Length: 446
Image (cartoon, rainbow, N blue to C red; front, side, top):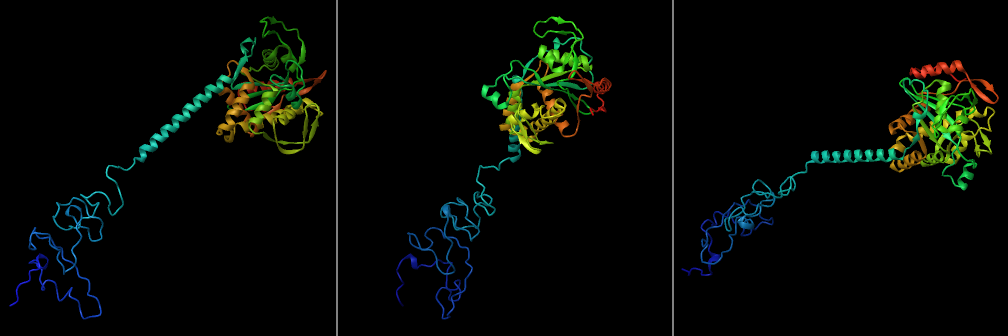
């Protein structure tokens, strides 16, 4: 009998392995041309230290499949489900139990995506809430700052408390809007470009009454050549009271004589209508406002030229810049009914300008809004009680009139005397009564 082999422990098979449990010749080769079929490997555990014989490390068993590779901490890789968790057992504890890395107890990568430990999902509801609060706060702060900035730029230098013997105030709000020929702030070159001339002082080139009420807004042009009686009045600078003498003059002469307060006094006395607010703008301010909004589009009914104002227009829709706009509203020598046609042009353009200023493209665009506010507020003279809300109400009312939501008309005229236009007293009385009671205006100027 041959002596037993003494090659060492690697030739010692464990008790659990034998030719019987390895299957019919599996692993020894086959006479067939086809490879051996795949076999399912049994889960095995490493025997305790020294079970294979000898004191040194022993080779892993061969035969019925290759044992799974050992993982960290004794945990082997899983069968394709993913990485096995770390630290599942002590070193040498055995092969993988099949638990997937990221499964309960493992943490980390899982089958449904990575979610790192200690990183909770973002609370979007809370983020949106704080974003909304921040946005509202910025809007409020900006609006308040803009209001105080704009309010500080208003020139409140007209004191209507100096107007004496005033009629009772009616319903609604009445604005007296004046365009003066003041050349203050204009250089010699600008005076030449704008065809303003160089006359000293200032006179009224246009006068309008805007009534804002619940029954509709009404814009009434007062011709500068209107015949009015100068009543008793209190001097704006002297403080003296001047008695009435029955003297008649043109309406714009009242302004030239003692400024805004006498003009208001003359309008109230001759119409019987209480004026709540006064707004005046000069040549330079008017042109600057038009340029700040990028020009104003207007439809001109007929072509006309005027060498005195510099007007040279074709018929049709066109955009006017500041210089052109000033020429358009000042022209009177090109028309047969010079003063009445000019007041119609002034109404038409001012309504278009208000419409342009009040559009979202201007209000919501800070690059247009602030230059427009700056140009307009710097050039306006208003009464001491005028607020920004009153001014905004006036502009939006003018926009409404231009959009067809109100009435636009000239003061009713019955004839003329010595070059002065005479108001139709009966129509004026009805008109004032409707305005005082905030009724829809039925009077026409035709």
